Amino acid sequence: MRAPDGLYHESQDVSPHPVALEIRYLRDISSKQLVDATEDQWRKLGFTAPQTQAWLKQLQQILPDVATGDRLVYVSDGQRGEFFFSRQQQTERSVGRIDDEAFNDAFLSIWLSPQTEYLTLRNQLIGMNRP
Image 1 (cartoon, rainbow, N blue to C red):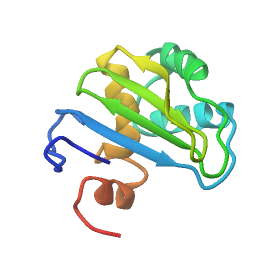
Image 2: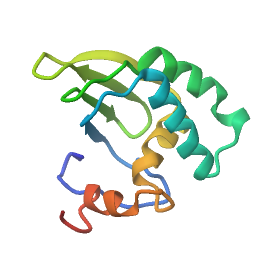
Image 3: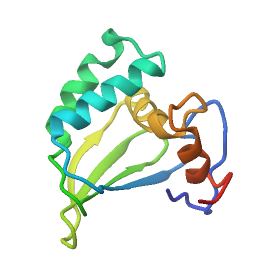
């Protein structure tokens, strides 16, 4: 993860400033599996189905099938964000935008919320402990 000054500043808002979250895939995962996993994480974080239905539909259009070595980068300005995708060593291309601040925060919450299922990874991402 990257932030403009190199530091993630914690606050009640998981995206109080611009961040870029890069995911490098170590195995093949279908778009459907990515969307289903996102839905599962949102449910665990307390988001309700009525809140997430439209977001999940939008993610179905954005998230591609990924293969080992592919990379997905989510760049957020703190309110909105954009997904960039690249297959292995190819050039990144934009695959979709999020223009809803609540959706932006919900997506980043999967990794950055203090309530995330992946607390060790979160702490590494925000610089609290090194791998």
